[in-house]
Amino acid sequence: MSLEGKVAVVTGAASGIGAAIAGKLAESGANVVVADVQADKGEARAAALRAAGHKAQFMRVDMTDAASIAAFADAVQAQFGTVDVLVNGAGWGTTHPFWEGTPDLWDRIIALNLVGPMRLTKALLPEMIKRGGGKIVNISSDAGRVGSLGETVYSGAKGGLIAFTKSLARETARYSINVNCVCPGPTDTPLMAAVPEKVTEALKKAIPFRRLGKPEEVADAVLFFADDTASYVTGQVLSVSGGLTMAG
Image (cartoon, rainbow, N blue to C red; front, side):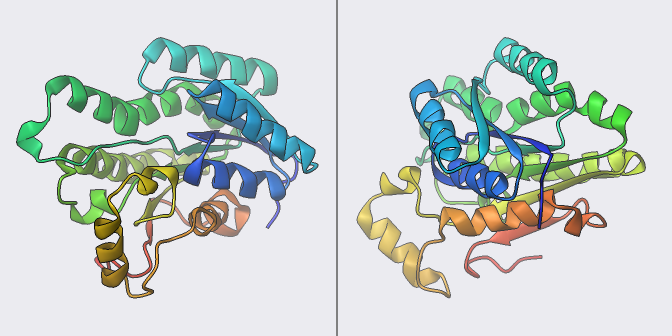
């Protein structure tokens, strides 16, 4: 697979799964925009990729803020023109009973996991349409496919991202734009490190492979969708969960 000469934007790319995706796309030849709200970590990730001989630069974006997203999209297009690959990777949630959540928390979770990706996609899509091609990969979650105990609002937002993926794929196929979705299961990330050990161990026992996923394994799935190898694949949802969820 080769993304040589392509421009790829990856949100949430400062750490975890997003960082692995940025690395995988850069290794495949793409000029990667490492996008994140965390400037220090984002700059460090981009610098590490450049030190390894790849093309990467950091650009800050707050995916919960409409003005930040608009400014980011303008800056990206001013510097690079059309984006070839957009990976909506930024995401976050908390674990607690639904009735203990607050509307402010709901708004933040929905903004980051659903509305933000929609806003950024809308901002970058017109140039893709004009050019007649592009790849959009949304990072949802198996929580959005089958639900997740204590993550009701997060699951709802991620489920919305899946529906958004499928509907947008129908709308943009005529312009040769592929829109697909990757759903990670429990993955060894900084966010997972905050989960109590007994919960992590229970998850491992429930996963057929008896281990957490690696961020690089999710990145491999994203690379497939970003490459022309998947030129006839659109509107699809791929679970990378070690077999934890086997629903269609």
